[in-house]
Image 1: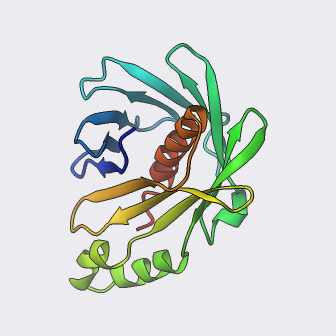
Image 2: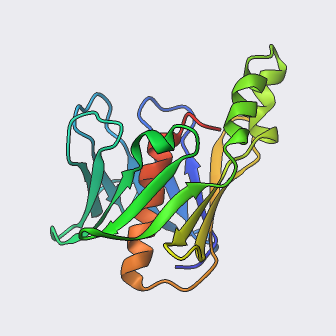
Length: 194
């Protein structure tokens, strides 16, 4: 991967759609979430036409705050999973990334006060439209020993939701797949925050 990666949510769409491009502007992934699914199932594609599926993300249960989202490749091989840390995630977003049943990586929101300030600022008439410029969340992916390996941050923007993923430390190819899929799923779940 050519880092940094840029993730952009399509603004005028009913179903959430994300395009991910590398530093050279080449499309890496395209994600379109289906609406009205009781049990979340997302397919990640290599092209905008959705002809080359790369990965599938499937929830292990119907609409649940702490569901586990399992990743498989196009051949059905298990890659890993991500799971929100339940009630601990209400204040500060926290997710565990799994390889089988073990969790060696996690995602954590750097500053939970940003979403509080964003919510309050959004309620002010006219000024609330500019929250995308002022309050921008940052998420850190780290190992269990606290070593940060990747960083996801929102780019200040008026109408669009754009994020940058920066590699901070070395990851194996399998860990990189797990982290990128986890970050995409987390953004789909946390898109209302900031």
